[in-house]
Amino acid sequence: MASEERSESGFTISQSHRDGVPVVRVDGELDMLGCPKLERTLEGMTDLSGEIVLDMRGLEFIDSSGIRCIFEHGRARRALHGGSLVCLVSAGGPVHRVIEITGLAGEIDVRQG
Image (tube, rainbow, N blue to C red; front, side, top):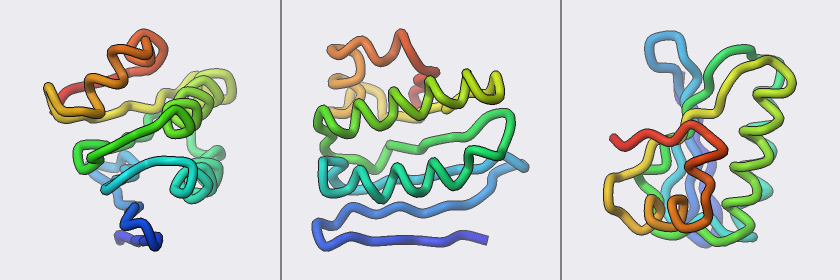
């Protein structure tokens, strides 16, 4: 069952499961206005062990607050459960480029899809 939350800025979060793995899909622009929604969503999943997929292929923009949010939750998942936050990005897209430039790809599991 999927659920969706949309902000005034067009940032959208939806949740589903794929092959038993929780998936959080984000679309639009992840900035300081959208981060609280993403943080609440990911914090609501802290009791889940294993892998959580953050599908960012629909993101058109991400700022430093979005990078911080993803980094912190990825680190927390490893510390709490030994699990991971897998980030799917579009190859060569603007979000993929930001992740590479900031070094986030070396800190979390980033996969091109």
